[in-house]
Image (cartoon, rainbow, N blue to C red):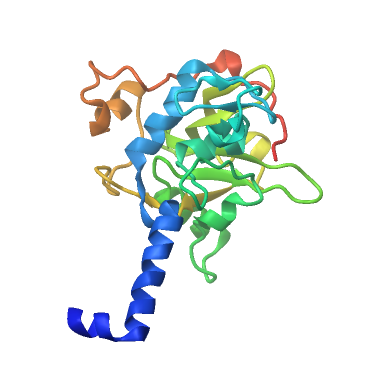
Length: 249
């Protein structure tokens, strides 16, 4: 259909206007976010050790927003586990402002990494591990019987892929931390499953990478941070602050 036909066809004009409405009204659906950016945003809170709270909000830089500030909830993200992940993924509302999902609504913006129905449990586990990339999440959605929690996957911590480095709002008293976590989560909690944000893009990260190694190696492989010697943003896992997780919304 030519441009002239679009201008003269009522149906074509309606279709074009509908597409424009989606793009402008829901920018989070129109634009993706690169994995490097997800990790960089997450590391801002990890570096600041933003304290955990289900009733506080913070900016992307990790500054707590006073609750006396008019419209403070629209100026940042909630400082619990799902709010932290929403911040890192740059989740937005229909007006393009920040919005904090919870562990029950996150799955609606993500796709579970599952494999195929005919896979055995062992094959499915191997497939899930092979597909996980930095910026994906390990999620236990909350239900009516138990609370949820969510962690940002950063990289594998060993060659066997039995442990990974994750960023999360761990809970009261520990805040936002980097931790080495057994797969899929502590106490072999199989309610945690791998998910991928629907708007995430690989950017300069290549799927062929194994994402195993030390902090310095992992940083060197991420172009956004330059060389390992010049990179200072990636936070080393802190075993002293791997506290009890507070069930989150």
